[in-house]
Image (tube, rainbow, N blue to C red; front, side, top):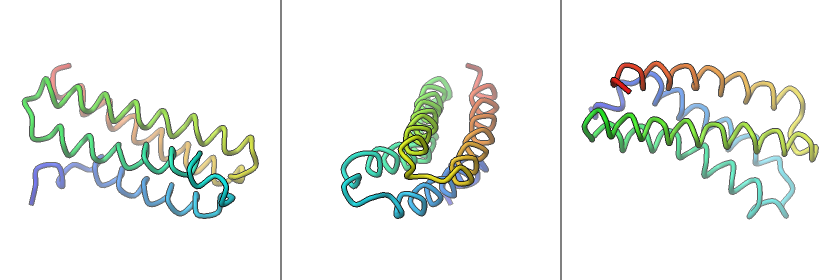
Length: 116
């Protein structure tokens, strides 16, 4: 088992990516290269940054955790755009936001534990 697999935030980030993939399947086909792609890439980047950073010294890991946070905030912003375009229901947008808020707190705690 890799070090990052033990991190609850990495596991939660995988679940979050699953949620984003599920929700974006409902988007119009013309958004395949627009918001669908952007949301999926940003969502999958969260867990990828955690995994990649975990193999680095703590100072570098903290930077990767910061990058994961940036990707998370990108998903939140894009989900608001998708909601305004009526691609996401209010309920779906709220579920994404709630999950993102929890992950954000977890990332902040992880970053703090790394001494950054």
